[in-house]
Amino acid sequence: MFKKVFPVLVFLIFLFSFLGFFNLAKAETEQERLNRLSRQIDEYQKEILRLQSQSATLANQVAQFDTQIKLAELKISQTEEKINSLITRINQLEISLVALSNAFKERVILTYKMSRFNEPYFLLITSEDLKSAVSNYYYLKKIQDSDKNLLIKLQNAQETYLEEKSGQEKLQQQLVEQKKSLDQQKNAKAYLLAQTKNDEKKYQSLLAQAKSEYEAIQAIIAGRGAEEAVGPVSAGQRIATVIQGPSCNSNGSHLHFIVARNGTTLNPFEFLKPGVAFENCSGSSCGSTDGDPFNPSGSWDWPILPSIRFTQGYGLTWAIRNTWVGRIYNFHNGIDIDSASSSEVRAVQSGKLYRGSYTGMSGCRLRYVRVDHDNSDLETFYLHINY
Image (cartoon, rainbow, N blue to C red; front, side, top):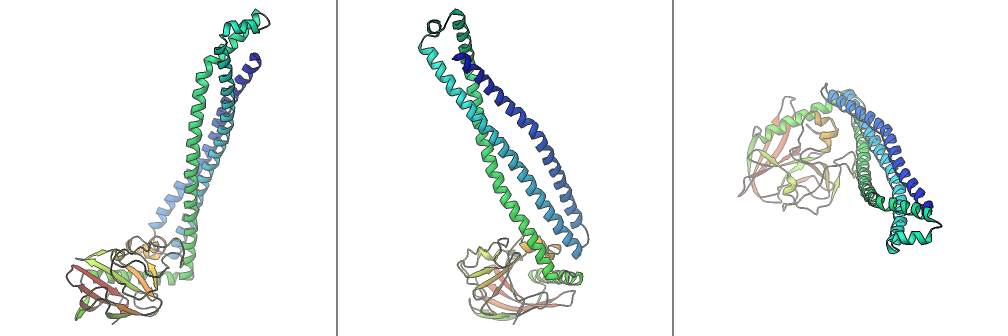
């Protein structure tokens, strides 16, 4: 019986070693593919930097999107390759674990029997002759001596299996995010072409408009606008109306709302009340998952009536990352909002009201109102309005 068991055990150990060798040989081929994908990813990342350093044209912007889309696709392929490689290794580990577990169980039984029956005498009386007894004893001693090594291999295989499974789960999560990013890049390109109608003149007009608006807003925050004092206002009091449709420095109806302290802008969401009805249109389309976060957490009432149509957030926004405005500025100093029910603009806090305007190099006159808050070093600006 022992002679039959031992060769099987030797074969299982050989199988385990062979699987490891086979996996190593296969990993080299997989590694070559991963290296190729890594080289291609590096090349496309360099190409994006090159395109970003060139002049701002529609063709260049489209080329950037095409490159970013290809880059996203390569990253997805790279992650899928890693996942497939892990699945192969996990399957092989499962085979090895089953083989090692079965072998170890058999060896535990044999070792138990050997220790129970005081092996030399037991083997002597159960074997056909002395030669068989010696032979059986030799096989059992070999099994016993290798038990420790087999147990270590089994434990290592189990640990590796758990690590590989954990790695697979992380890569699956990464793959979901990469596919999401790819969809966002495609949506951003579609948005660009829809807004420009694939026309270079329209693109340059949008660039000039964004540049003019940025210049005006920076000047207004710095106190260079031409202002006149109106008088005290209460929180909730009407102070202006949002211009309907395209206007100076704006390609559509919206209120650009800014909170500032000593010339430094702050995130308006830190002051505005949560719980207001809104539609998030700050991404590639209204309701898309790639828009800016809408997360008010303050106590002020809103400057316009709900429901709020939210078109750009504060800071590094979707528009900066994906549209022509990113060629002009890299930080949005307020939020862009509009009301579905009214064009009326209200003071968010009591204070002193000023009416002003700024005319930039383009000749465009941007009107705004400013409220210097009572008992506070804060002030709020309301742009793209009529008095």
